[in-house]
Image (cartoon, rainbow, N blue to C red; front, side, top):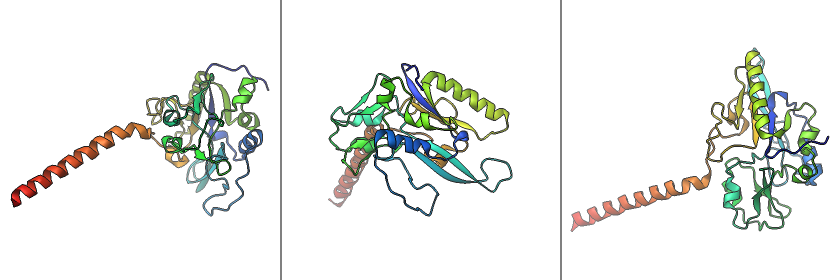
Length: 265
C-alpha cells in the first residue's frame, strides 16, 4: 500500500489489538535482511526472542499478568510489539562521536552504517535499552523506521505486516489524536487500566528527558510491566549532578580529615 509521507511520522502501537503473532518481527528481519537470533527456551516466557538488539529491531513481548484483562480471570497475557522510540531529544544521537546517528527529514533517528565505528557510546545513552552492538559486524544497529521504504512512499514493513492494525504508522500528530480517541473508547467500555505511553497522558509525559516520542503505546498495565521506564532520564543529564555530589562528598571528607589531623596535632 502506498502512503503519503508526512513531515513528522511515528508509530502508534495499540497493545490491546496485539495477538502475539510476531508477524512484525518476521517482516522487519526479512525486509532488513537481519540474521536469525536462534531459538532459546528461557523458562520464563513463551517469547523466544526476549528483547530488542542489534539484530532484532522489533520485539513482541509475551508478559504473564495475574488478573489483568477480563474481570475474574486468574492469568492473562499482555502482548506488546516494542521498537525504538525515535526520541525528539535522542540520547544516542547526542552521544555519538562520529556523526553516524542523524535525524532524517521524517524526524526519525537513523544510524548510518558506513559512519558507525562501533564505539558503543550510544548503547548506555538510550534510556530504553534499544541499541546494542551487533555480534555480526560489531556496529550499533536499531530500527531505521524503514527509511528506504519511506523514501519510496511506503509504510514500514512491520506496520504493513500487522494483521490486526496493532501497529499503526502515519503523521505523528494525527496518531496522537487517534491514540487519545482509542483510550477514551476503552475507558467508556470499562477498561480503566488502559493508559497511553509516549504522549502527555498520566505518567508518560512529553516532558521526560528524551523529549517527545516517535513511538507511542496504548498499554493495559503500568509501563514497568512492559519493561518501559515510568520516567526515563537521559544518562548524560545526570553527569553534572553526580559529579557535583562526588566533589561535595570529597570536600567533606577532606575537611573531616583535616580536622582529625588538626585535633591530633
